[in-house]
Image (cartoon, rainbow, N blue to C red; front, top):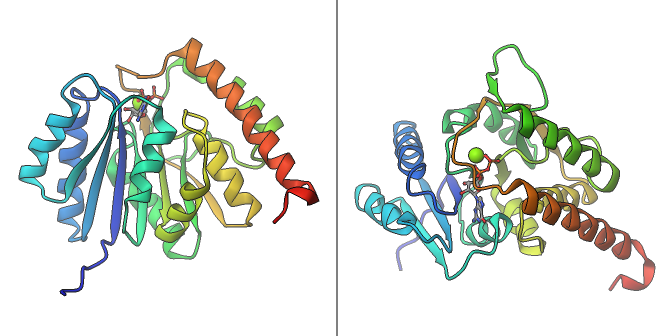
Length: 249
Ligand SMILES: Nc1nc2c(ncn2[C@@H]2O[C@H](COP(=O)(O)OP(=O)(O)O)[C@@H](O)[C@H]2O)c(=O)[nH]1
Ligand SMILES: [Mg+2]
């Protein structure tokens, strides 16, 4: 049997009703990765979309065989979709990026050196400032983000300023291991992944990246904020319970 070469990079894109925003993102990403001469795969996880997301990915797959879709039968949340995608990856590196191109694929160049130099995870950040970084965030999202960050600081990860940026690079095996053990299906999954990583003393680098607000957000500020808060409490209780000696194997 011919040896199957391992991709250098697997890009995982969660997508919920993204027929409008996904095409530009897929085209930019595939063009860019090809130009760099990388061996790559792009896995779009269609999370029970009711629009043409799945067909759009199919059409791209004819132009770029590196692109494929995983279709879930119903909408379960971004965390579930990202987990499903990551567990199907084979890449030496795994990049998770949003469908709306808020952080363009070229920003990979800011995260990559950290992982190549030995970090397990390099996460894009909108909280850290740098002179050469361009940020365009809506004021009400900034306000809600600050409240969420306050809760995260209380309940979850210490020392990370922006857990929620949708642009994160992992060493491949690390990604598959962490997501294999994660449980959170909603938007708070990033907190759980980072907390699992911190508990294992993995090295996490937080790096400023460009981020431009894109219209058409899939987040429902009322219901998703409440679900995220509930999930933070679940994550924290799991961590506390795991800390008790009788729950150890
Ligand atoms: N799989 C899945 N992805 C989602 C869901 N909601 C949002 N996303 C994806 O998560 C990413 C970020 O969502 P977006 O609406 O842009 O969030 P915002 O930029 O923070 O407003 C996009 O790729 C969405 O398609 C969902 O319920 N399931
Ligand atoms: Mg977005």
